[in-house]
Image (cartoon, rainbow, N blue to C red):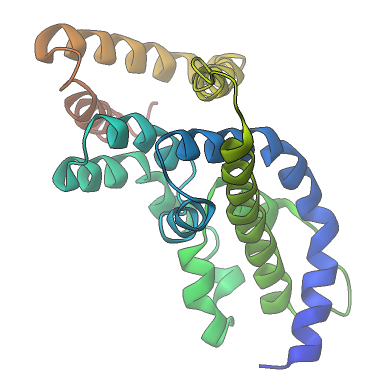
Length: 228
């Protein structure tokens, strides 16, 4: 690996990642504050963000951790929630084929935001592909880890009641849902998701409905993959 070219690639990727940085500020800080409210220090929060770098699952794990850690449930839920990442890798095969020793890191840090940048950004001239994509992944990874740690530090200094702050995370998912609803072709999938979730909640109860709902939704989308 050429360090000089790597630094050049990171610099070239930086402008493309700025929207992610600003978009993550509030969410990552809120995540850190909530981790602090559970008694986790900034170092533990950053470690959790680095090891379990999976965005929405990290957020979903907060109430699960506060209710009592269940490794089997956490593992299964993580797989189902992040199953979409397997499909992210398909259009990036050609882009990352010459990444060499950098490929394991690119695979590990593949998430929604670096994926969207990698498939849409026009690489500047004079920058090697592998170093440009490495820059995208490295910067977005560091943004999330550092901002979540900063949120934990801020949470340790907060003296007022933070009850209800976790609703910001619920609001984020609502916004994501509404963005999907704006596209008419996505509405059948949205309706299926709501209907299956409500049905599983009635059948399995409030504490056990999520995993069955995810399994049923995944099965429906797999069967109807040519039409949904």
